[in-house]
Image (tube, rainbow, N blue to C red):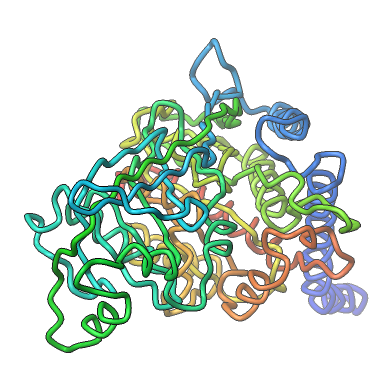
Length: 490
């Protein structure tokens, strides 16, 4: 062998890995550029915060569907009448009438209406002449026979007692009247609770009665009875406290005003060779809050750059890579949901009216708020231990030389993302992301920019982890679409 050939071989050996590393760096840089372009577009003021039912929705749907069409996907609605866009109708309800009338032995007891707030999540809720039963702080729940047809009188203690209120309603109370005997005021509760409630059209919102009364007003209503607010509080603090009736009855009424929001999910499909053997679902929500601030604030729009333009960007680029690769065995459905910020309603609508039976989905992978961490972080599974997917995800991580975090701390957010709506319908759904392995960074985002006008595209936005998420999502999709690796739903 000549000396020139030896030198050439040596050079190839020395620079081959370097050239490969250079190609990988270049590909990673290009991917981050592509991700940034999507985020800049979808989080721009031109989209108005991507609020369902607005021009911002129209622009968002147009952008997303164009991406899918350009990649060569087909409509995934499986509905010739609604190609690409699956209609979702959302009911928005906000408080209207609030009325409370107290009586003792059939005679009305005067209580100022501005000292009582009565709310319902339904269209109208009414309780007439219901006896009051004092339950203290709600630590002791009376038997159903002692609550049926009665309104529970609950001490507030300066805390949000929503869990105890719900427990009393579930135990049979006709309503709950909370006494604001701590630092919370009726105005504060009203500002917090007088927000719109949302539900899918055809789904009934609660209809429960949840009322609040100032300590002063209740004290006045108790005049002439055998108890006072002070004596009630004293009895509630006793270790042997037992709930019991008091000599007051109440009629409570609450109504809401209703509007309808006509919005859409976007559904595309990457057809597989053997669709009869199931499908994989990839999803990210497209919606946000529109204008969420008021003057004199300079910036009024909740642009949602991280939440969730970053998730849409990851889903778009993962889908692009899948579309360029050899055809998979299973169909891959690509879903952009509406109404996530209003209560996971788009995902719920998809689950209630899916393009294929839900049992066909062997796995679902949600992507939400992923532009938080740098490249190289381990991956967390939001929903770990809640599906049969964990072992297969670990196998993919091993194949891809990726690390998974060993704990399930990220599950603290499992109910706050679209995968939860699917889990409730027995679809194995998780969110796998490197950004969610760094809990401190996630919490910092939640405490600062989350759902605020400051969630905008910033020069320091971190896309390294998002790029990692794209590559891992592609690997996960290919694995779960392979009928040899995953013959049936785990």
